[in-house]
Structure formats: structure tokens, C-alpha cells
Image: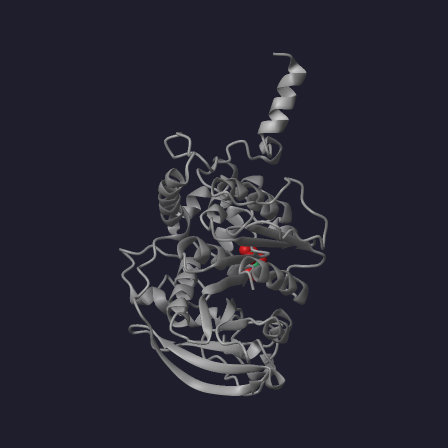
Amino acid sequence: MQVHKLYVLLIVFLPFTVESQNCSGLPELLKFNTGNAVTTIKAWEKHKKELKKQFDEEMFGTQPPVPKGVRYKVVHETATAIGGKASRKRVNLYLNNLDHPLELLIYYPNGVKKAPAFLGYNFWGNHTVTFETDIPVTAQWSRNNNIIQDHKATDKMRGFSASRWPVEAIIDAGFALVTLYHGDVDPDFDDGFMNGVHGLYPREKYSWGTIAAWSWGLSYVMNYLEKDNRIDAKKVAVVGHSRLGKVALHAGATDERFALTISNNSGCGGAALSCRKKGETIKAINDRFPHWFTANFKKYNEKDDSMPFDQHQLIALVAPRPVYVASADLDAWADPEGEYLSAFLAGEVYRLYGLNGLKSDKMPAVHAPFHEGSVGYHIRAGKHDITLYDWQQYIAFATKRFCL
Ligand code: GCU
């Protein structure tokens, strides 16, 4: 064959060459671990189990089964939140012997019988999501910052994260918003897996790290949402920013009840391909956050480009349910291009289901969102954050995918 014809063939058949990205060993999505090709949906469903097991054993750790049912109590309710546009409920969920409840803060759009919903953790407690004065300050462990000392949350942080939770825009679009503090489920520090929900299960049996514990917590919340008659439980989008975006992806990959999965600036261990070694590396994340993943994951320190798995496979586990990945152009630590490429590569599995993924291996320009298929993407100008612009894209994509 003439050399130029070979080039043409390569260009036509290889949607994305990863050699130039330190990614020559990147595992192919549509191949069993034996190397046999995955060509049907049935075969993919089988391969999915292999991949799930690999992520459990090598990266996130094995979770205990999510308890069936839910114990809960509505602790407060008002029909006149957000200038009368929303109802607001505080609901406590109880778990086995956990000494404190998981405290849900829920806004429902008034006038919508059963609302589709966004569900996501917040970083600092429910009182930081809003300036409303009647949301109690979390009593759980908080990370120290220039306001918080001795890991004790304070009223001074009220509304601190309000820009990340544009409740009114979400309500105006006809969605409910469900949020809770991730520290209710597991405190975000290396405590030898003793505190939070880790303490409820034997370590010998369950190797879950904190990301898997947070994701498990979201599944427990879903048990409640299935019982809440103002929520359309078939239309719940799980969403998270940064470490909580890693959690959203894990939750979407492990619990099929999440109808849409949204990863905002999730970076290493989330949407970004590790093999590229751009931004945060596996060693960097394991060194700073040894509790996020299972012990086995440490063996990949400095082996980012030779792992038997990578993050495009995690995204693909969400298929055929829609998934959305978002980046910010100044967020080099999260490797925006790596986030885009793994979302692009996951499209292969969506195509197997007859659905569309991202069209091109070239990243779109900033503020040029792609919402046409089952894999959504945008890159925003600015730093690592979740902003009104990001939420506007999620609302638009969810409205489309949920056929609202
Ligand atoms: C750190 C960490 C990231 C994480 C981020 C966050 O920067 O290295 O992996 O996504 O914190 O959660 O804010």
C-alpha cells in the first residue's frame, strides 16, 4: 500500500491518536480484558462488569451495598422560599448507627407537581449555600480556612458558597435542588477510615475510600428522593464540582437511578485522562488526599501512563444515560483538555447504543457548549469554580435530555 493511502486510512479510522499525549498504552474502551473486541451492547454490558470491578479493586475501593429503603424525618417546611417561587424543606436522613443525620436542604419549584431535580453535595455545609438565616450551621467537622478554626463551622460562613448555587435560576427553570454537606457522610481528612459512614462497616470487607463513601451517600439520598412525591425520581441529575465532581461521576457510574451525570472541573480521578500526566498526577492526589481512594491506587503513583484503566472508562460506565463534562480554561490543575478527551473517547460506547457523543477530538472554544448528543461539554473562561454560566448549561442540557 502506498504510504499516503496508509495515512488517509489512519486519519479515517483513528478518531484520536493518543501517542502524542503520553497515552500510547491507553486502554481501548471496546475491548474485553482478554483483548477480544466488544461489538454489541450485550458484550459491553458484560465488559462493564469487568471495568466496574477494576475501578472498585484498583481505585475507589469496594462499597458496602446501599441500605434498602430510608429512615427520614421532615424537620422544617415552608412554601414561601425564594420570594414565594419555591417551597423549601429540610429533611434528615438516618443511617444505621451513625450518630448524626444526613441533613438535606431541598428547594422545589412551586407550581410543578413532580419536579426534575439536581442533586449535589456542597463543600462547607447547607448554611453556606444560601444567605437565608434559618438554615442551621453544620455541626460536623469542617476544613479550616481563614474563617473556620478548629474544624468548627461558624455562622460567618453563611452564604459563602451562594454563587455556586444559583437557586433562583434552577427554580425558574422548573427544577428542584437537593443538596447536603459531604462531611455529613464522611469527613474529608485521613482518619484511617474510622469516622463517618466508613465506621459503620468492617474495613476487612469494604475497602472504600472517601470518594466511594460520598458516592454511596448520594445513592442513599436517592432512596429518599424516590419517596418524595414532589420529585420526579426518574429525572434526577447528579452534579458535583471538583472533588465532588469525581463523586458525581462515580455515583453516575455505579447507580443507574441517576438519569444524568454532571462533572464540573473534576480533574484527576474524575473526568481527566491520567495518562497525559498534565496538571494533577496520581502521586500528587494520593499524597495530598490518601483517604480519597483505596490503598491499591497508590501503586499507580508515577505510573499514570501505564495503568490498565483510565478515566474515559469511568465516564463510559454511565452510558447510555447522558453525561456532561465541563472545564474552565484557567483550571490547568484539572487538565481541561484531558477532561474533554476522555468525554470524547467515551462517545464510542454511546455510539454502540445508537446515541451520539462529542463530534470532534478538538476542544471547542470557550463558551461554545456542545449539547447535541448524549455527551455534553463546555469550557468556560475563568478559574476552577462552578458558576451561574455552568449551571445555565446544565439546565439547558437537562431540559433537552429530560425532554421537558
Ligand atoms: C485539590 C485537589 C483536586 C480537587 C480539588 C477540589 O485541588 O488536588 O483533585 O478536585 O482540590 O476538590 O477543590
